[in-house]
Image 1 (cartoon, one colour):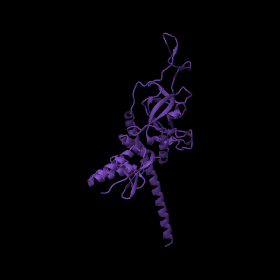
Image 2: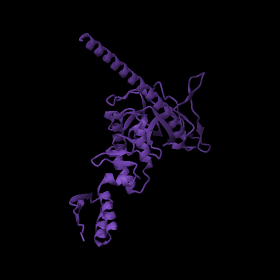
Image 3: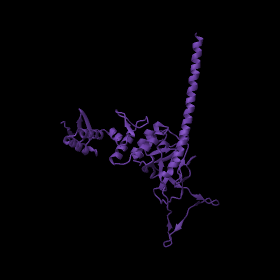
Length: 338
């Protein structure tokens, strides 16, 4: 009976199967399991069970196969170095592979990451995808069940002004016992505004999507401050607004990311849509969930796809017309030389 040997070093566990070295890092949560499986293999006498153990060891030592086996075949490994969501042609990035392995190790459902990748594939700008991965990996932004991610936006309170005096109207209360002024509490029902003025997104209400036409957003990551709806990491927005800012938690779909400026260390981005769901430094009277946003998001996604098809149709027509024109010119030259 053949035996397996597990060679354990401070950095790796190596098992030789059919002359090939299968390695797993010693600090991996599956390293001890690989050693246990080797012992189980060597004590087992049944051929079918031994083969199942070999398959399991190979899976644990190969991250791509581990993802494939633990995602019900939704992700497929090409046998070389790339992995794809079934039915798609863009390989998943290292960032997503790491998240998938993390979810699998923690026995979490990988469907949120599947949804995230589908939304990412719908982003018409392939270049911005890599920028997004760097942003999410650097800041650790959570990914939600429907494939959105959480980000933050610093805003101010949008005040009303007295029509006669022009003075700002602020609700002021005083403590009945001390007579001291009671500081105004930020709350969910307030209307907010960005610190920088622009043509879009100047009125922000909790539970209302904030949108801007994508074609009006600046997609150049080398341009720092430019057109677009701005969100960022907590590190970026925390001190924004000189201490008087309100920090909102917002949902962003990967397909609506436009650019991640290069000079903010992956802490700021421009998008064409976000959904405010909570005040992080105030009182939230209501709870808004991603399910409240998804219906709106699905409707806009259908419109986006229709516009994309229309734009590509125009481009294809231009190419076809150009080809037809060149073919006609070529045919006329051939006739002139007969």
